[in-house]
Each structure stands twice: as C-alpha cells, then as structure tokens.
Image 1 (cartoon, rainbow, N blue to C red):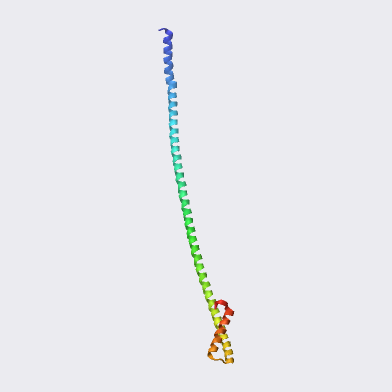
Image 2: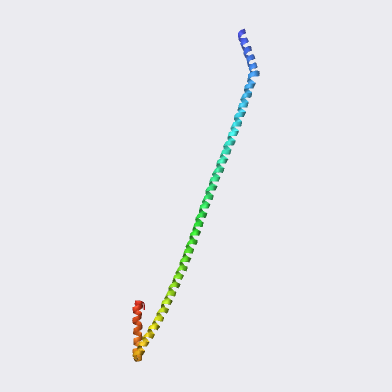
Length: 163
C-alpha cells in the first residue's frame, strides 16, 4: 500500500466521521420530522375521510327521512282529500234527499189543493146541475143520470184524461 492510499483512506474516514457528526444526524432528524409530518397528514386525511363518510351517511339519512316525511304528508293529504270528498258526497246526497222530500211535499200540497179545488168546483157544478134538475123537475133516475153526465163532461173538459 502506498502512502497516498493510506492518506486517502484516513481522509475518507475523517470525512465520514465529520459528516456523521455534522450532517448525518441533522439529515436523519429532518427525515424523522418529515416521516412524522407525513404520518400526521395521513392520520388527518383518514379522519377527514371518516368524517366525510359520516357526513355523507347523515345526509343520506336526512334525505331518506325527508322522503318518508314527504310521503307521509302526501298520504295524509290524500286521506284528507278522500275524507273531504266523502263528506261532500254525503252532504250532497243529504241535500238531494232533502230537496226530493221537499219537492214531493210540494207536489202533494199542490195535489191536495187541486183536489180540494176540484171538489169545490164539483160541488158548485152539482149544485148548478141540481138547480137545473129542480127547474125541470124530472124523476130521480133522470136526475142522477143528468148529474153524473154533467160531472163527467165537465171533468173531461176541465182536466182531460186525468179525470
């Protein structure tokens, strides 16, 4: 071995020792700090991902709850509409029945009035016919025939086929 080589080896070893003391420890410390920062960033990213997943799940649950509530409101509105429709139909049917009864009562009153009026006119006519019969002074059979004929003719003329 020659002296330059020994000097180079000694220089190299001195350089390694100096670099170890001066540069290697700060480099290792910087690498350790970097590794720590990266781990911390990864942990924060994982926490944020978990938080985002939880928020997404919560928002999906809120959307589902909102849909359920909306469906409930719609179903309630439909039920209320059905109930209202049924109430309106029942009221209309009751009104229809009431109006029908009122109309029938009115028809019955008018019928009774017409019948009463007819009876009054028949009595008046019968009296008029009786006066004519008395004036002619016919026998009872002829008298009855005349009254019936008079009433029948008068009723047909006044009321047509209803009599």
